[in-house]
Length: 215
Image 1 (cartoon, rainbow, N blue to C red):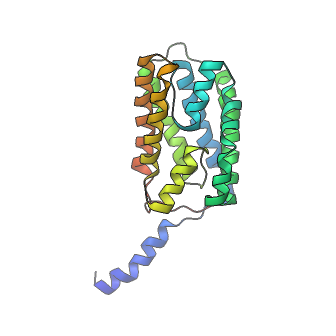
Image 2: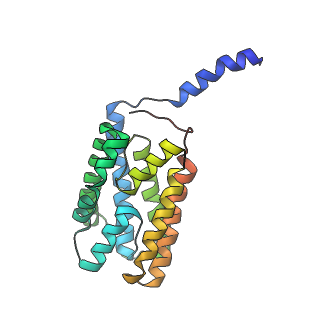
Image 3: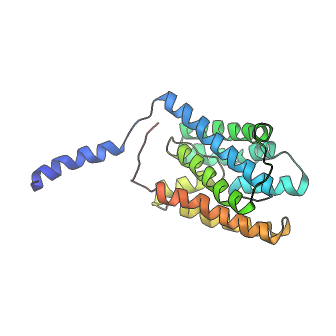
């Protein structure tokens, strides 16, 4: 291939990265992604584990005060919508609000649909983290998130090129380590393992410039 041919092909290759999703694909991604996150939450809740971000804060309040996870998660995200509107736009923020609402609802309903006679806590940490990571990946690729730290991580990636997974991993680690006052040390260690599993999915699959789906 000549230099001229390669140069003419390059814009076409770049253009292929930008794929606009129709509305029905966005709707299905919101449903599938939030269902995966809710399944991961069910794993963590049954095993007494925590995650990071607003999900982790909701877990802490659930374990400490016995409050409803879904309600607390929904309320914790409300302040972050202002940052979403300001830096990410109305469309992103509305999708995120829908995703947060769905996770809040499904997190309460999933335990009524799925029960565990036996669940190894290591398995729960790793595969629960994978499930939530895959769910977040679906949401990110359709211009949505689960609010809170997700909004901050996506903003930093789009503004400064920092990987969303790396940013979230750092914040999540701090939140999980702060949980030593609420849960047993072995559950804290497993929660850190779960946070690594979740953010590995994002760090490997969600990089700036690799996938540019539009909604």
